[in-house]
Image (cartoon, rainbow, N blue to C red; front, side, top):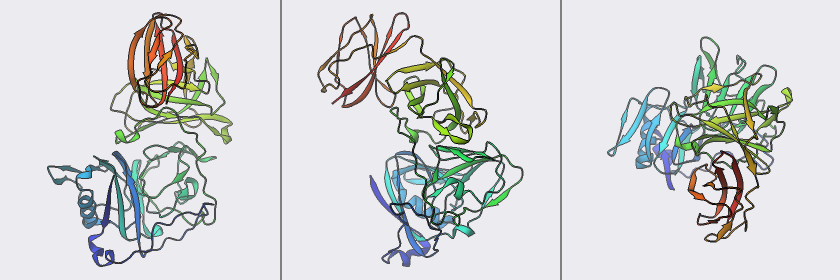
Length: 416
């Protein structure tokens, strides 16, 4: 990872000073403060390889800010996108229609390689950084130096409409006039960019609220990690789904399952249900990544290792599409028919890399070894009672066997 330092051209003299004012670090208790000084400071953040939704609270407005950003990104970045203007890097030069950057704006930055970037300069005054919101999708910066709970941060947004969406390139939340903002996006984080889908007519001015959060405990995520791991940075856009999950037409009331969306064997999103107290219901807030019109299929993994397929085939990727609503979620039904878990009797398990794994196959079938990203590492035809070579890199794998009648047998294998 490259380490880059960005200094505003207009602050060259200040940049030579020893800046002691760093990004406020929340104490272990996560007590919040509304202190937003306008004097010198810095902000350090990491850009992953691929696409990053980025914004900053350091004053980087105008052409000087864009020049400083592109000069320091250099060959590490290949593109900077907005909802309109863009900037592309090729043959050693930046070119395009983007001529300035603003703190009110979110930018999608594509990185050819990961880099750590530090901005130095004066901070914006949060209460004076006004964002104009219009109907449809708004690309919003987050010019605030501390994490804030979403319902506090957006408290000054006084005209939300039911089912509006607020998201980053991962978690998202939806608004309900009785329940506030609900979903997987619990806190807003400095350095990230956000999108708001606004349904109201006309335009409204908005500033982030930091006053009511003073002294309040930060709500940290309790969402459990998923075994399937999508590549979030591989695409600049995403789409969202709010769904209720059923198995054999019986609604599930548990967070101990995992819902994954796939294109072929490539995982395009994964999440666990969360409990929405105001509705007394477990809902899935699924963010999906892909290319335009890419078809999706859905799978469910339970805590016993069972993998279930859904017969839902009507969903394909469309940037910024939203499927389902909080009070009328999309129905995802999975079937246990022709799905058998733990029937392979893998032994030894865990297994050392390079050793053979004994398998109890009920019948001849196609064996697939699938990694945590949903990618098929190998596919072979095997007879009953065969052995599988554990020649994969250390990790956790799904062993999936499909016989001639379409029955699917699934088990987990750990390679050491």
